[in-house]
Length: 243
Ligand SMILES: NC(=O)c1ccc[n+]([C@@H]2O[C@H](COP(=O)([O-])OP(=O)(O)OC[C@H]3O[C@@H](n4cnc5c(N)ncnc54)[C@H](OP(=O)(O)O)[C@@H]3O)[C@@H](O)[C@H]2O)c1
Image 1 (cartoon, rainbow, N blue to C red):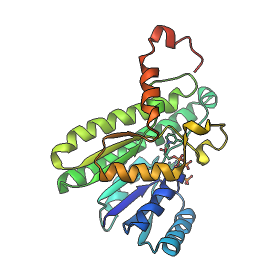
Image 2 (cartoon, rainbow, N blue to C red):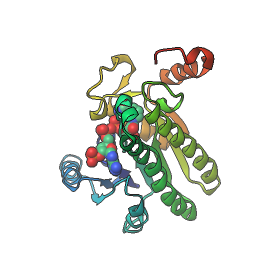
Image 3 (tube, helix red, strand yellow):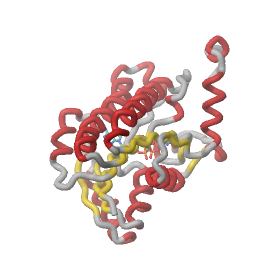
Image 4 (spheres, helix red, strand yellow):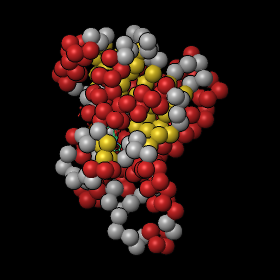
């Protein structure tokens, strides 16, 4: 049984994953911004899944706190999953530097900052699995969400480099590209049902990816091919499309 640190534990995907991993007997360290929400999740996991879990405050934007956060964990995890993120409308971000910076701080800088710290520990211990939830939005920048997409593109590139660095230490890194997921992040959007995954499906794919040592997963298989086609469109045509 593994000790699993879930960063952004109150994301809908993370909550599904926490339930799945708890039913398999793994011990959970639930990290997030709100102690009330973490406590509610912990109680639910204890009652419904007989889980062993603890809670700890974590804010991806508070970079200065990351080292102390990790040092403060009394027992270090075997697996870590970063499931936090924010999606702000591109139209709003165009008008606000503050929002653009927030998107970058959470989705890219914060995600990389905490993984840098954990990677050093896992590398020294020569064990561990690190899972980062990136996005197909990072596969090619589009006018409708390129600020979020570019943060995720940077995160995907980072995870690729980290995987390459840590391979020889026996540490495995998984990049998750979910496509659309029906969560509170997208509840204001009308998503095409066929292209949209449930948080439960994402959770089960993440668990399988860890166990099968997958490197990069697209949750619904056809997203790999959708993005392949999108990436193949010549830039001279791509720039004229309404995407
Ligand atoms: N939903 C989609 O269609 C979709 C598609 C592709 C990728 N993803 C990615 O999948 C992951 C999970 O997303 P989701 O759909 O499950 O989203 P969600 O339910 O909206 O959850 C997002 C979580 O991120 C946390 N968060 C935001 N800012 C944070 C910060 N500064 N520090 C720590 N935690 C912070 C939130 O914490 P609070 O609970 O405190 O608000 C919330 O629990 C994210 O990385 C997202 O970018 C989602």
